[in-house]
Length: 343
Image (cartoon, rainbow, N blue to C red; front, side, top):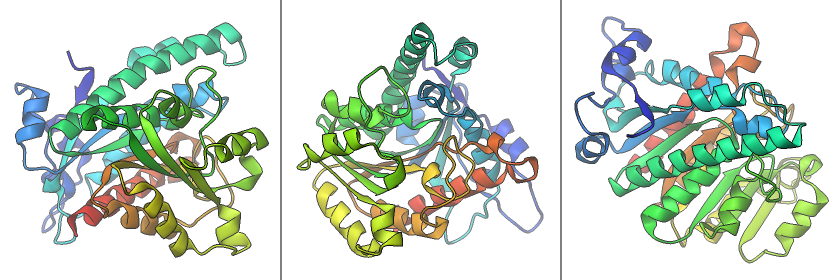
């Protein structure tokens, strides 16, 4: 049995604000009928992109971060369905699968204390189980000939994305990560800070580029570890590009693409790289949203770009009047990716 809670047509209608004379995404987006096998429908439907959510913050908590990323999925749904269906982007290109059922995992983790060693071990074990679900779904979407768009959740889910893609392709894959952090911490049990290091260690990740690291939040140990593997892992920093202007943004995108485009690659977007976006590690400084959108368009249009993962958004950490903005931002990024692949 698939551990997926399907989005139904009636739920889609509930989220969509209908308006006379307009066609919203929610009126054209596809959902899977309850009486049809999931992967049969995914394979046979006309949509090119399959969207699903992972409403958890267990990986963030296990990495000593602030919980709240579980709320990004519903916020995204409410925004994506109310985009206009028009010549620029069509809702019929998108199938919303639904979300992974992590309710039991969230309940099991709710009373665990990351500062207690035994509880931290249990949190990692719970994340291991979520990893299996994520990799299974990503693999099946790709085998069906579609492009996965994954909404986290924490950045721990990068591991499942990479593993699922590698299993679908039958070989290791590459990744580009737009992030303030490497998420290449030591193998100390799964959490949101080591998804890439686990994928690398286990042979699913071949080459890895981290774009726009924040120098103040990258440890000496991680930098030294990465430098020892410079043939397979490269990075630049936000300060090099945007503060000291030692490097040019457009040139750096070209260098990064040249490093990873020889193989299938995934695009990872961590919202804590953008200033003042509600996330577990919110930052006051970073690349602008417009710059992130340009980045996504540039990499998304490459034929080897296999998936998009947007993570670490935490609407519930924003003030009450602005909690819809994170989902609205994610919806912009989703449509930027779809448009890039359609050109």
